[in-house]
Length: 142
Length: 86
Image 1 (cartoon, each protein chain N blue to C red):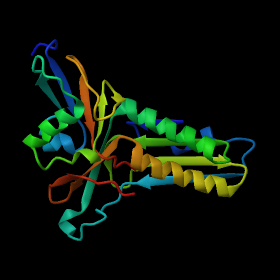
Image 2 (cartoon, chains in turn red, blue; image 1 turned 30 degrees about the vertical axis):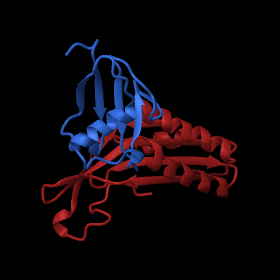
Image 3 (spheres, rainbow over the protein chains, first blue to last red; image 1 turned 180 degrees about the vertical axis):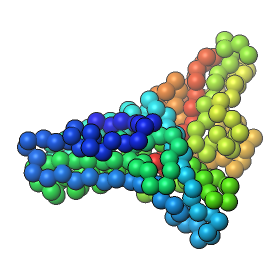
């Protein structure tokens, strides 16, 4: 299942959705808001908070297609992805991906696939707010 | 404006800042056929620093469409810049 959340992500609740008696392994990725831009070297450009916005209907649709594709493409038993929207502070969880499978290889591969496809395809946009008062939309970090 | 002669353009992400607007009401010229590509190029003519067409995905009424898709009065046209979630 793919979901958007305006509230802090409840990782334990999401993990419960991925539990499956067939599964011998669980792989999880959490993306957190970091305090610096990936390219800026200037301390005044330190990131203070992020804002994520989405086209909600299409984000849900495209995100679910990615989950469905992962379920078909990899030998896994369950997959869940949740992406935050709204204003996030440093350290907040922005995305949670979890996959369970009979064996670890498929779980690792599917988790990375879902993360990469979500970043590339799901209509969600990230705006950074900087210590110096500026802000800017972030290009995809694929 | 009367929705019988207008469309609504929705802008997302960086496009909102580029055009300093989340939505734009656009009056249709009677008898002049147009498609989403022509519409986006008309917008870019106003703001040349807007992303090039190949970076944008167009939608009509919350559905992805091809660039040659036409539209009619009352439709909501959206332009989605490259995703940057995660």
